[in-house]
Length: 480
Figure 1 (cartoon, one colour):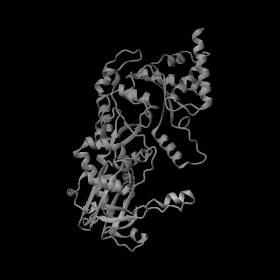
Figure 2 (cartoon, rainbow, N blue to C red):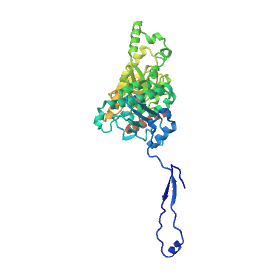
Figure 3 (cartoon, rainbow, N blue to C red):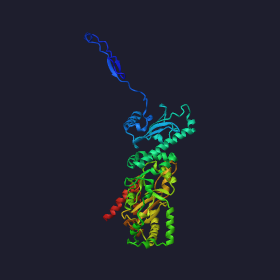
Figure 4 (cartoon, rainbow, N blue to C red):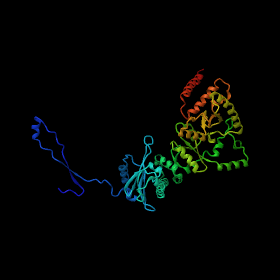
């Protein structure tokens, strides 16, 4: 039989059976020997004569890109998208970089970029040629101009190699920026998966950070993705709305003149200072623990962005350095004016006096001299107390945790920078203000403090035991 040119005939020898003995031997004499198996096989190509990365991007289909990805990287999950590199001048470089979909909880963020020279494999993940942050991706890069017989120390000081790395970085930045401009909806869908790549790249490469500055996305409280310029356009409540909500110490509305009470010169100086004032972007690190603050922000028509990844803290610090006049602040770092009821100067003075007297009672009840106590009139009258920790103190504590400094207190609260805010509009705060010498005053002070702490994190074992026992005692008072 004449076979086609691309097929061959392969013969397979049958397995030989062991010699039979006795009666079985006589029965076996009549059986025929098994015949050879003949299989027609078509030869498989081991190496592609024209790999996908050598083709022009216009000649490649989506199916080809996906098949190549599955075959080379043995990844059953489809990549989010890919970048086809194709450059002839000033050096020859071709390749494909895939942005993989990563399960952050169960997988390490580690990619594989294979380096070739004229389709000859050299090595995986050479940091001197490929920017460090792109090692998180998967892909292939083929550069015929790259020398094969040089050491890694030589590559580090090679200007040509640096140009290759810069080109790859630029192409990735251009691709991401183009997606954000032309296909924002798709870019939004990819963001949660690609944000670790981009943020890590911004931390490692200043040029990449500059190119991506306006195309970094932040998810707000409503789940909408905003760029950095869009975040800066968000304003708190208008001044007119605040004036309408202004009340005096008796809860009655006051005129704008009573709230303001400033000369024209003072107002103009204040306006000039506001222009130089930093623009604050509020952020959330834990939607569950900071839920009360989130509700207060929404009620005040304010917005915040959600930053829950470990890389976000160093990333926002870098953004502050790169963008003068921008400051990131966690929503529980302070009580903004938009969350307070407007009061007259007389009422503010009275609250300062109340805070001074209550502070002594609170420090005595808590046995904590470091705590700072403030009395404010919050718009939400259902909130009795809350704790704030200055942004500077929190970042310092985060840094200590990161570097595990021995001998340092890792507690997020109870140290410097902590402020206990008591709501003057709440009945419990009004009670301890009027009955500071009462037998239950200290017990209520402890309860207010623990309630404020619970909004941030679970109490320690001893504190929780005391809190439960104290809650039972307070409920017993209702039965008397």
